[in-house]
Amino acid sequence: MDTAQASNGASSAVAERWLDEHGDALYAYALPRVRSPEAAEDLVQETLLAALANHHRFMRDASERTWLISILRHKLVDHLRRAVRQRPLREVQSPETAELFDGRGRWKVRMSAWKGDPHAVLEDTEFRGVLARCLASLPSRIAQLFWLREAEGIGSEQLCQELEISPTNLWTMMHRARLRLRGCLSVNWFESGGK
Amino acid sequence: MSLRVVQSLRSLSPSCRDAARLISEASERDLGPAERAGLLMHLALCRACRNFRRSVRFLEALLLAAAKTQALSSAENLSPAAKDRISRALRTDLNRFDRPCP
Image 1 (cartoon, chains in turn orange, red):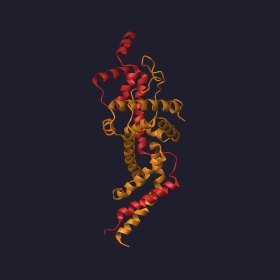
Image 2 (cartoon, rainbow over the protein chains, first blue to last red; image 1 turned 120 degrees about the vertical axis):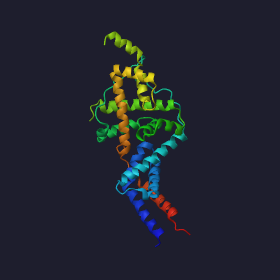
Image 3 (cartoon, rainbow over the protein chains, first blue to last red; image 1 turned 30 degrees about the vertical axis):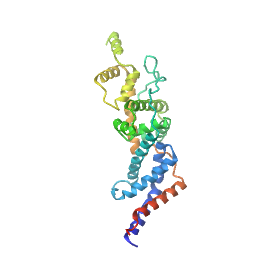
Image 4 (cartoon, one colour; image 1 turned 60 degrees about the vertical axis):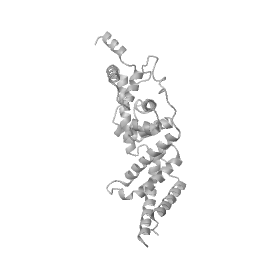
């Protein structure tokens, strides 16, 4: 066997093992973000292909799962950008606040104080379920943009440029996402006494 | 503060609707001096908007932390058919790259 074949055999075994050990976790991470099984499967495939191509960059002291998830997050960002670009966003004029404020612009809903620590509360399986359902209840494009902005930490200016949307449109959509998520989490978690 | 002072400050500060928008936009852009002053005045007088600002910051930290962990993963697995397809794609790709030079 020559060296090329040997390395092919080794890489192929590594890729198969990644798929077995981490394929489900990668899929489960991607699915709620893209909301489509086909797109999530494609992302797992793209991630593993990219991982194979960059195998030499893997730091031995990092966890393999963490490394693969970080590659998946890059692929996910690309996917969400493509998705928003292919079907351009409508201009959103108002954050739909009629049910939140009265005629004089005062809150109509209870504005409770959220207590606790974001990192600690994420450890709670039940809370994670509530958060996932609240994110899933947002319109898909708004949820995708909110994820890029807040979770992946992409700056507003950069998002506006790359997705060719106006800053006011982005701000309005982010505001809408925050108002709705805050409302959903308040009712389903913070005001119902947590667990 | 006397009631009249509080009332006149209230009439100068933005409404909760505008304050909430400014709280949100402060995460997206730098607010102008007038906007900042109005917002600060409103926040000093309005517990509800202070609570809103707190939940906006909570949400930011929450989403950042959720992205780094697998906290929001679904419970679903790859279907056997999908696994098979991906496995084949990986092998095809390896053959493409690792073919010995002619």
